[in-house]
Length: 256
Image (tube, one colour):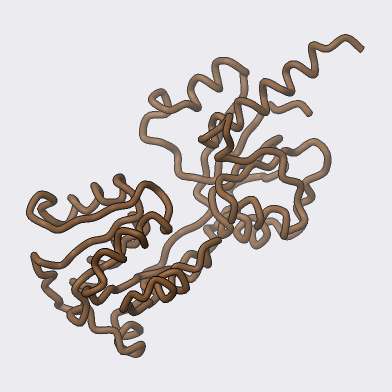
């Protein structure tokens, strides 16, 4: 399989030279394009009210992504809700927790975060069972059922969708120009199918996926999964791509 052009289904980094993609481009002579496959639409405050959600009812909020943070504070503003200083934040990882600084004074708040998985976070929340948790979500299901995990842990919570993930308009690209497609969420696969219903992977196109849910979505859609991350040897998707390119390079060098 000859890989010349790679399409990464994410927005282009502000400075690609500061990313692992730069080394990949130089080492293997590939061309890498970036294209956002999904966009996010916020749920209106009126929809939240119909679900009988009142933000002031909760003493703690769970943040699973930057998008969750953005849309939580957007809704708070729309609902004219002043977020109290004693509100507790439970974040899935440190980078998500640090993103809160865009909206609050980090040092003055009670912020907790897990290592990376929601399972880690549940263990932390179990030490705060007196809290009434708000679990904001999107319309996209994850490989883990967060609500079920919290119920099993005996936590008092309310789950509500605060934003939707929808397919972006990809009419500006020719999907058949690429030898490798890289995805980061099941929603990205849905966007591929929506934008390019006639797309056929064939034997000359590799598909990569980050995360078990994305990998499953690739297979469920009828495509062949050629590379995935994280693995023991490739904890990141860029490392998985490099492993694949290296293996293909070695195949070419083998005597026939």
